[in-house]
Length: 583
Image (cartoon, rainbow, N blue to C red; front, top):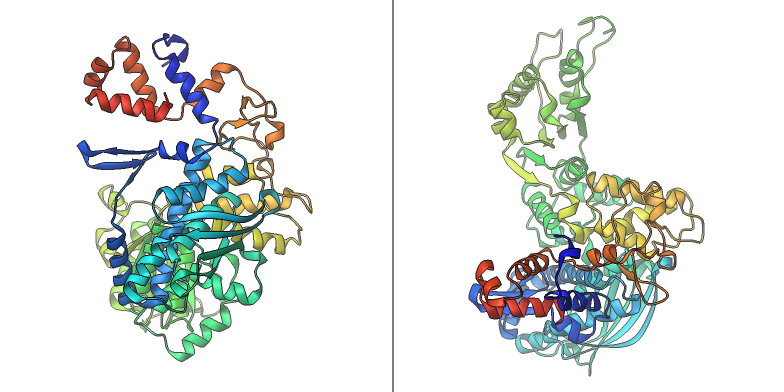
């Protein structure tokens, strides 16, 4: 719909929307995004569906969790849930109030948590410099429901217990800064304190001892090992310990999102077995990383992991590469050579891009997997192999079976324990952690004194769709570290130098207080004003609201007629227009 065709009937709604989009997120502003619709049994906060849960029910759930997985396990789970919630709320504030200053955006996090009934936040100290990657905050938490419910079940103890609230604060702050922020509860009413007192810093500002104590709650391997009934043999534990600090960057597991946690839990389930695992997911999601993690957590960790990129093997060399060759088997075979199967015997064989194999190669592979033995090219004796197979694909194998390009019997042989890895755009909670992880690695690798990410750069990375997934994010951060100058921060133009893939930024407030659209890759003081109609177009974020206005226009401003056409009641339409437009 062209906004130039709107009649004066709906122009008051548009003016109200423009004013609302540029307002600071006060408590009243935030409350307007909370709405109830009992007709369809929904509670909405902005565009997110919510549930109302009694504090006592939350306390009972928390109690059951502690009794099931122990205090440390429950703490990990609650902190991760809180982190996800905080990250989503930070996304809301960035989306609805893109022109808000950094301090107001941070204070809005506490207001949101109060609105949700968890805690009343009092800011004691807030030092914030996003472009230099610095944050230090001190807060008092009053009336923490989490602490009160813990006391109800366990009484006053010795340790701080506001775990989910800590996770929320970490997720909210980390999403704005683009690096992990850790909050510590130095005083808690559940531990005999008069109030809950919290201190937050970026993780890289903590001492080594503090990092070891705090970061373990964000380390998935710590959570898995702590809650697993499987205990690897001592020699495997020693092997893991000896390699944990020397693993290359692509082998580090970083994530906190639901999709990441589900995949890690599945790895924990299957790692003690010798079952074949099939990883699926888009290119760049980290299938090889997860395969290496699975091998390292298994009882075969001290044995070799042999990787094969099936797409890179020519058909003429495939059999020799996989199964080996005897001397004289073909021109150039001057000595006997073991293939990948033999080299992986006792350990793990990782077959990447399994869909790339020809039907002939699939047949040979199937026989080797079924028989547990191979024959070298030019050989005449079977060789037993004992290995675990992990396969990976970035295509739909079931569709490939229908198309006749993949053998159904091989699929069933590989698909014993499938694990799907979601794309990065579906696990945005992980982006700040990955940003910090790659930032630390590349600043050290290139010996650069880069301070952090600019606010625009953080927004760009958090809002990008990542067709190349984690591999693309890693490349973007590496490019930014290389392009940024020492003692300065990474800016959008460093990562998107040509602007061809740079995501559109939202509206912000210029120096004269007017709305403006930031030029790609530039900081707020370089924002370029845009024409009023373009400005208006970007100020209306909700497609649903635009549809309502279209129907209202067609009905000549008659709310009852518009509501009937939309299939909702007149009060519902009036309420939704008022909620969105502050009319």
